[in-house]
Image 1 (spheres, rainbow, N blue to C red):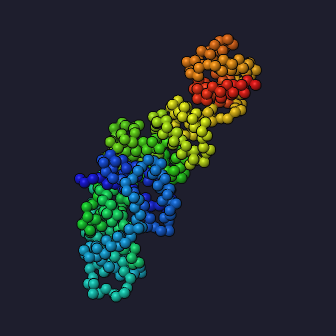
Image 2 (cartoon, rainbow, N blue to C red; image 1 turned 60 degrees about the horizontal axis):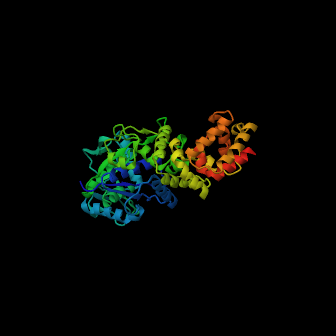
Amino acid sequence: MSQVVTRFAPSPTGYLHIGGGRTALFNWLYARGRGGKFLLRIEDTDRERSTPEATAAILRGLNWLGLDWDGEVVSQFARRDRHAEVAHEMLARGTAYKCFSTQEEIAAFRAAEEAAGRYPVFLSPWRDADPATHPEGAPYVIRMKAPRTGETVIDDQVQGRVVIQNATLDDMIVLRSDGTPVYMLAVVVDDHDMGVTHVIRGDDHLNNAARQQMVYDAMGWQVPVWAHIPLIHGPDGKKLSKRHGATGVEEYQAMGYPAAGMRNYLTRLGWAHGDAEIFTSEEAMKMFDLKGIGRAPARLDFKKLENTCGHHMAMADDAALLHELKAFLSVSGRAPLSAIQEARMMAALPFLKKSVKTFPELMEKAAFLLAERPIRPDPKAAEALDTVSRGILKSLTPRLQNASWTKDALEPILTAVAEENGIGFGKLAAPLRAALAGRTVTPSVYDMMLVIGRDETVHRLEDAAG
């Protein structure tokens, strides 16, 4: 086979739906894993609903997911003249015809068919009419000559063999009376001209495939490989909607899920390869195939999503994770990190990232390095700063002034202070946590001290000691 070419072709009528994001991901993985091309087309023929803002949202969503495409973004609307050209070429080939029937005539025909107990498929009287009988100057549409007997078979890589009886399909309009092409024609022309070899899309398009395959046949073009993937449902098994939570890709970014974890989770949502659960995108490209896609709708599972993201947070490169954290802060409307906070965060990521699943969790764990003096302990932490504990902290600070700032050097100092006061290290850790972070649950005392540095540590302890 020639080079694999896939495409993602969303309509810019809102945000990038999470289902659309998965469809784009499947196309991207399939093409990239075979050294092929992944193309992007914006199906913006509905001029009333299509907006530049919606297109921008789609591009932002794809960029956040890390899905790069080849070449320029194609506008379907900009290609309308080409679509009309193909409709007229079908006329010339004898695979389409001019239909002058009015809406009233069509409605009357269908009503009569229903009354007679027949399937109300409109049979145009103009299908085989002599062009000499065409009414001069009358408006007309161009209809494709669909086969009236037999069946159309869709050999789908996911759904299997799908058979449509041709008698249930009328002669589809391909060009309206105002000269504008219909969507069903435009899709086929665009896919053909873009060299698309595999059409991987939601199974809500499965009913369109029969008509579109007829367009390919009418033009003598190679029919692409079809793969119609089931939609995503909510945890309750119903079609995913706002009641289930976030449905837009950008919402997941704003909620703080890491992109790599999201890619991994969406890849596994409705697709499987043995027992593979956690994998990188590079590994996914090597494994991904169409036969691994299930026929049943996949259910969104937020707990599994979080667990997958937790693995990817722990696996992430620290610099890349910091970069994504800063983007999360921006899109979620949170305050950016200061230069000092950014340096501290970079130092803390090696241990912080191991126990979090999302960026909000990371920020919560990093509260100690984000806090500014004076640290205000929460009520529970404040209980650890009684008179005795403050005295112990006061005796500790001079010993830290000239200590080497490593865990090996700090550990014997803190252990000695605890022993001198007849307490275990756990009893010393509580006031230290309160002084350094203002909380009872924090990373290890040593990790916090090393991240914020000697001066900040001493100042926080002095503030708490009073």
